[in-house]
View 1 (tube, rainbow, N blue to C red):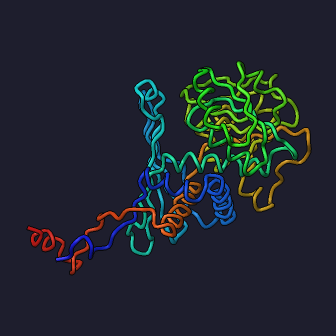
View 2 (view 1 turned 60 degrees about the vertical axis):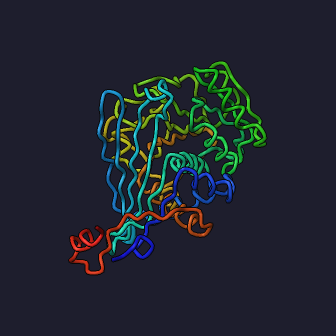
View 3 (view 1 turned 135 degrees about the horizontal axis):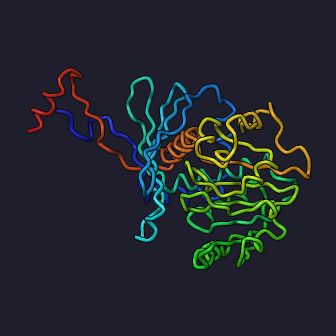
Length: 347
């Protein structure tokens, strides 16, 4: 009879292990390398299966599956979004993910993805801004100072060169939390008392709020020429952050149009409104920022290929650092036809 030590084991990255990996490598290194990993995968866009995420909506939130494959590996992420959780002291977003070998169907990694999603979302935001933000932009307004805000701020510092972050949240405690967590980061962090104050001098604007409803965090008169908007919070049907008129003045860049038209800011626009896919910008097939007066908008909703990139990256990091556990997840009888015999002998 095979014992657990003899059977095929699956590497598992727990929350504790994820934190250890990030600290061993350094969060700036992780953010930078994640951005590079995502960009490399976007450059082989045609290699991937692509589908909008599979969502199950309820009155209090959403649970989603995000699958993709490049023909060699298959990956998916389970993720929820429940804004009401905060009132109960729970995370609004939790996630885990899996990678599997396409040749056998066997899983090769199971990982927490609550932390990993925060890291990859920030890395993706900064990667898009590296191609779209105005040259020399060093000040970012961070509207919404919840769980994503520190990751976004550090990613823009590391990847884009932002030096100043102007914070605003309707809850001053969230702003105080973010400002405290960014102490010692090298960023000049300014706490603001209104959206308008946060936007002063900011050529990059990141919105990342949690309410699952159509909101107007930014109105048209707030956005001047030459601004890059990183719209992160609008990520499901009926949830938006920007006034429609801003979209009409902007060149809009998306991950996967079929998903973004359902979930992103562009759900406010006709289905034939022109957008540019980011992979085309990365590959040089389409222009990003063309001039200093252009308003660019990254309508970020998160796409499965980004999670695939993150899982593959963190699997490599875990194996290289030895920071993982082994799970006895695969039934592996001596005779593949004798699954019952394995069970029977285990008495």
